[in-house]
Image (cartoon, rainbow, N blue to C red):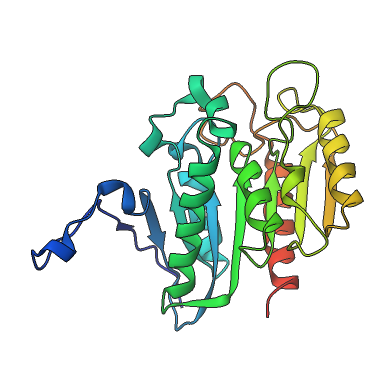
Length: 250
């Protein structure tokens, strides 16, 4: 049966009965997110798709491929509430870090209570900035497994690593697959490999794959930023992502 895409926009507040108990602060509501479901009966495996520093628009074209693979998708915009932009992206990892951790946890909990979703099969995929948050969700065991595409491993300016996602990990963490290009000029492979070693030293379940000659943002099919589209790597990375999720399904 042909799969279809259904988009549900989540509004800040819906009021049905007005009483003292119904009055909530807007900040208590989940962050803006969109939901998509494949055709067919549930419960479905699901994936939270996390955007790059370019903002929510940078992953919109990637959602359908996960739906086509049979996954329900929750796609949150973790920049919007905090007024973050590409220019202020580094605030994601320090000033707003704890708030975003909480907000993404809330989205995952919503996924697990969604009757269409198998709460034992919630996964995460993140791109660049979003890869950092996949580390949070897998490192703390919030999701079944996760995949980072050209992720952020060094989350600070300068030559030394002072902010990295390795602190999230332990021997009890969920499995993580890290996909990276050896010609990434935004997140240098040397930095990525250093953090990978730190994660492995903690006994975490980390797999890595390095693409020869690949730069950052290989899925840039829409040409929204300076990195060229790399069709071969893009297709292989998605194939590996789905295979990794299926390997860890219950």
